Image (cartoon, rainbow over all chains, first blue to last red; front, side):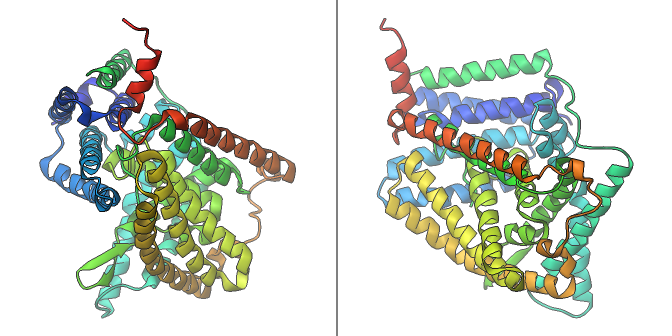
Length: 217
Length: 266
């Protein structure tokens, strides 16, 4: 079932709202005021309800991102700044929860279009397009390499030759992709589309709420 | 190590460091000899290799494993410009689709995970020459990890008020260990490549005759003026960050304090 966010906003609108929401929460002095903490919790709840991320996906991605936050908070704890550590950890966790709620509404195919609409550098949106287009094929190559290795009787951890073989195969694929695009006359993706009025209104609303979060007591 | 959102909360530091990271990344990408449109699909496909390779875990000790980033292998195989572009694409996808690495710190992550490791490997290649490409890749990977950790530690000290000794000591220690493992792995992988497919090593390839000279943007004059422009922008960005530093504070209420000062009194 598509989420309300997916129905109301275009992919570019969702990326823009996500960036504004995450930036607002990531730079706000949350622990200074209970009202701010409550407002952020409500924003996260709203994002989860409107984004409808799958629970298992959210838990898995959240745990992976959370580990990185724990590693970065350790210097605060070692310095005895536990209150500061809690503040940083809460802010980071809130930002991750918001980012994941929006990320759950974006499919692989939608991201390159969103970047092109937002006028991201063409080289970057083109590289992202090629990445997402080829990801499954390259993943299949990697799996077939590991399977072939097991079928030849190898056991245990794989060696660096698997990585170099995968790189060689991927480079050959990259050459073929490049030639195919050149033969079709396709260069980097053109900038496409514009933000709709709904996207702009939603982005402005999120921006206003973000500023209120900073200014409110 | 990816920096997450919310760890560095000072908008001034975020703006300055992100701008500097982005400027250096653009500089590294434009330093390549290939035409830009030719690089994009190639770099994007290789970015898929980076994501796929990061899914392959290398056991360290029983019960613990690590994953390679791939900057060293990429740099050796395709050169620094394409390697940085590929890694940037990976960082963007990870931040927007998986919340792995922050959206507000993309420029900083680009500096620590793409630019510095790639430049370290490329510098080692230039220093040690073609004959020692595996050693250059291994050493460069290790140094790149340490450089990235140092930059991340400096970011935490400047932007989050962490004690320098702890931030740098902890991060550099952890990343140095990971760098040793990844460096050895990368060196072995590059040696395997050099033995079986030497044509895949970028330094061994001639300039591609399929790219017409008029599309090749790398005349010496154009490249050096672009390099000067890029360095100038990076310097401006860092200057802005340093000029704003007195207004930035490790404590979370810096922006609120500045806004209170500029709002008219009731």
